[in-house]
Amino acid sequence: MKRIAVLTSGGDAPGMNAAVRAVVRTAAGYGQEVVGVRRGFQGLHQGDMRLLGARDVANTIQRGGTILLTARSHTWRSPEGRAQGAAFLREWGVDGLVVIGGDGSFHGAHYLYQEHGINVIGVPGTIDNDLYGTDHTIGYFTAVETALDAVDKLRDTAASHERIFVVEVMGRHAGHIALDVAVAGGAEEVFLPEEEKHVSSVVEIVQQSVSKGKASSIIIVAEGYPGGALGVAAAIEEGTGFDTRVSILGHIQRGGTPVSSDRILASRLGEAAVHGLIEGRTDVMAGRMNGEIVFTPLSETWEKRKDLNRDLYRCAKNLSV
Figure 1 (spheres, helix red, strand yellow):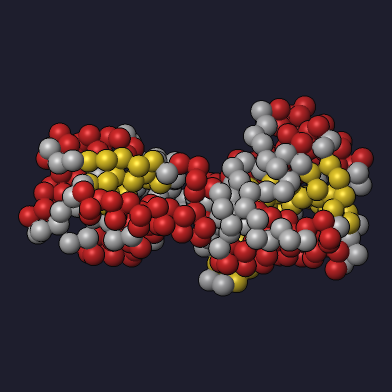
Figure 2 (cartoon, one colour):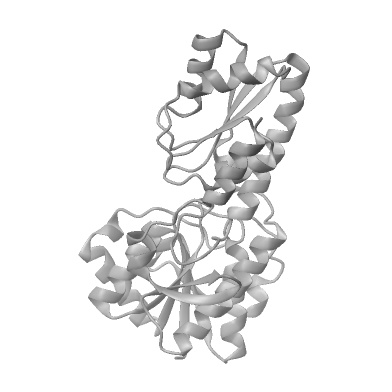
């Protein structure tokens, strides 16, 4: 293997640059060249590529976003689009491709291998932490810290005005961020896509909190919960008449300097992806489970569901008294 390509795809996640850096520098240590693909699969389809050396990724480990840029490509969903991308990779003499992204990106990589025999390894880069085959995904730790910082600030305002704040965090299909923020932020309740809990249950919880002398409350809602934060807030106001405010954190959770845990995870997984390609692995994702590097077939990362930490969910309920 003489030349490896790397791209970032889908939603950006803090730590992606650390993963790109690890790929480039690990490959350089083996005397391999790295081709950086700009704008994900869209850029691959268009041939937007350039060589990256060790110095090109200097001073990037601390930067949020992705220096390679990212985009969602409708063209890549067609066999013709993937064929064009494969042709560019062959033109550049690429022997293997590292794809840093989430399940949508891994679908694209999987089809590239199936249809054109391009060796591919995925690196889990998504703040949602929803990929099977790794305990955590790159960007998750930073997203939790960003959301928690906002919740801490909102709690000050909630206490000063004796209000209820309903805070919506990211997590369209998974409630990992919401659950961690709820426990670390001392929330009175958390609503998750994985839990079939009627929104009316929050009324009783808020009323119990008030009866225990609490003048303010924080409710955490994952964006994937039916009705979202607006629906939860409406139920509270209708059922209790209490002054309620909504704060939707949105894309602020994607940005910012990656925390140390994301930098370390990204560095290990970027290195592991290069080692995997050298060892002849393909159509797999490099992940970390119980502190060890593991490789999981790409198809399993989206076919098998990664459940919430049920012990942590129980903890959240027990501590919200």
